[in-house]
Amino acid sequence: MTPAPWSLRRRLMVSLGVAALIFWCVSSAWIYVTAVQESDQMLDAALDHTAHAVLAVVRNEASELNEEKGGFGTELAQIDHSDQNDIVYQILGPNGGLVFRSHGAPTAMLAAAHDRGFQSVRVDGKDFRVFTLATELDAATIHVAQPLARRIESARAYAARILAPAAALMLALMLAVAWSVRRAIDPVARYANALDELPPEANSSLDASRLPKELQPVARAIDRLLARVRDALLRERTLTADAAHELRTPLAALRLQAQVAYRSTRRVERNAVLEELLTGADRAARMVESILTLARLDATSELQIGARAVGLRVLAQLVAREFVPLAESRAIRISVEADESKVLGDDDALAIALRNVLSNALRYARSQIRVQICGDHQLVSMRILDDGPGFSGESAQRAFHRFFRGTEGGQPSDGAGLGLALVLRIAQLHCGTARLIPGIDKGAGIAIELPGVVRATAS
Image 1 (cartoon, rainbow, N blue to C red):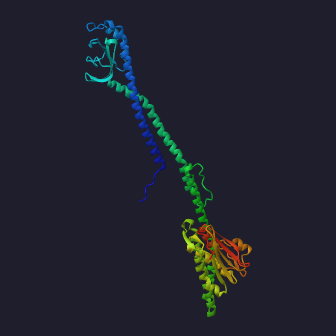
Image 2 (image 1 turned 45 degrees about the vertical axis):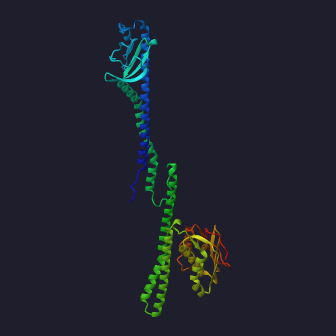
Image 3 (image 1 turned 60 degrees about the vertical axis):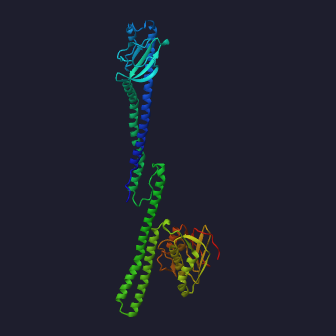
């Protein structure tokens, strides 16, 4: 089952958004806890400050504090205890009795007379945070308290004031992430649109300078692919056009010969025409076979060629043996001089290359053809030499061109003109090359040079 395609833009936005959201939640929780703690510390400091303020007043009135006289409420009430945090206090006398309480303070004791410092208590059904402080010689004890509900409300309000800008920044961050992802992906989308609009016959590569650095290798790979596609299209069009042109002549000749044979009334003349017709049909068949082979090789890449180790000595002997009967009928001797060189490749394709070179050599050789194979682990050379007339100036320049035919006795050869083109293509598919070299005496020679596998051992 083919997996559903995924969107890079959506994945980036979701992943970055989720990461930012998680970071914001964690940081907000940390900020909230810190804000609550700081708020508690500030409110505790307020309790401590209020207790010391009350203590200062009590010290001034300490001589008049007793359980029978409670007329100091007016003076003590002047202390600012009516702030927004609802701080209340109680004052105990030397014997621990309640002598004064602020407005809103509970009638029950907020804490015991001997308690000191901070503590949390529940009085009259309400929870309080209490701070206790006493004068010298415990002449008076001060309980300063604040309802816990009020403290929690203040802490939350304080934390909310801190988190509100963070929430706004989080929204701005999400918008920035969306804009950044869109801006980063837009060059890819534009490149894809340009690639989609590129015509098959375009001879220029796409501008990938705006793509991210990470996608530059992909763009270069696409350019190389486009170049291979253009080459393949060019070879296909060239092959099709040349094949149509080259087949037009033999087909017209076949038609003419068939008409002559049809109209002929004499048996001898008809047989001669039919013999020419068969020869022309064989030549057309060879041309079609060569065209199909070349088309198949054009559609093949170096990576599709087999990677088996091929022993060239055995291969050359087998291919040469196929041509021995024809060579002997023309009084031509074929010799093979080969070491144990090996190459990585396809033995069938290499055999086709050898057959084409040997067939071409047999057409022009006078008395001998020599096959030489030698090399090492870096380069192996297959040389096919003959003692024929050699290549002329134009033939040497166009020998490996498709549908180029040399001359025999001043007349164009009856070959398809694809033999050496096939040889060159097969060599290229094996990461090698083919070139012309001097032959025997003043004859011609073809060298097929390929990367070797193992070091040669002379035989």
